[in-house]
Amino acid sequence: MKILVTGGAGFIGSHTVVELAQAGHTPIILDNFSNSRPSILDGIKDILGYRPTLHTGDCTNPVFLTSVFEREHIDGIIHFAALKAVGESLEQPLRYYRNNIGSLVDLLDMALHHGVRAFVFSSSATVYGTPDMLPIPETAPRKPATSPYGNTKQIGEDILRDTTAMANGILRSSALRYFNPIGAHPSGLIGELPLGTPNNLVPYLMQTAAGKRTTLTVFGNDYPTPDGTGIRDFIHVVDLAQAHISTLESLFAAQESPETFTVYNVGTGKGTSVKELIGTFERVTGITIPYTVGSRRPGDIAACYADPQKIKKELKWEAKLSLAQALEDAWRWQQNSPKP
Image (tube, rainbow, N blue to C red; front, side, top):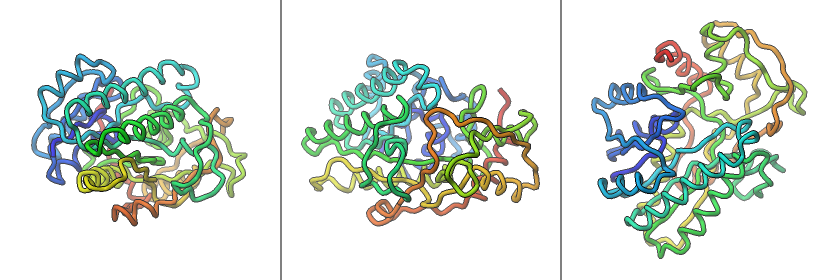
């Protein structure tokens, strides 16, 4: 199948492009490079032995999207392209709504017009808000979002559900609610490459270990958790990429199913605290991480980890790579990564 991967030069997108190609599909990358670098494409080429087709532009530009869909015969879409920083979304809500919702609506317009059969949406565990239960199953209620970013994921899921419900079975979709992607490709050729100061824990930790940052800030040590730091479900990005392939292929295989929209948690099912993650990195690398404790960030919650049984049962997917492996791969990437 020919699969359009929006945000295909980004962290999760680039790994999914690799897994798509290795599964026998033809990935088509669409990216505006607002939060990624063209150098990632060199890493993809080194892994695959060829450079996938690239269209440079913005998903909120219907004229650009029309040119892409008229040039390529797209069978399926995996939609990653979105603004994603929780704190920034609190400061710039309209920018997040305009970009994240507008791009989804424009892509779905194109998908319906051009006969696309499958659409996988990059959702998030943030749709659960502060959860009532741990681990979190897909049946848990969606809570009022704690950030505009989280709200765009809730709204996006609703748009997908309503759109595919009226598509007469031609277009089917899934929203993957994933937790905390970390790690890098084991080759060390692609990985997370944040522009400016990292918003996520692991790239900041890696830059601290490499001496690019003097100290790591742990945001809050007074949460109601065993060691006071936040607990998250950290999943290796390669496992996450493979979950997208399993989901996409299930949508192609389900053309006779009455169910047109599904949601899946994608996580390990295990919660790890920030302190535990730092300790694991120090153990596997022998590097001591200097850190200080700061105040809690707006929008953060104490604990969040997945119940991944639904995707395991229905799609035969489960996370295979360990936290230690993810951190080893992230460190290898940090040592190899291109300089800004």
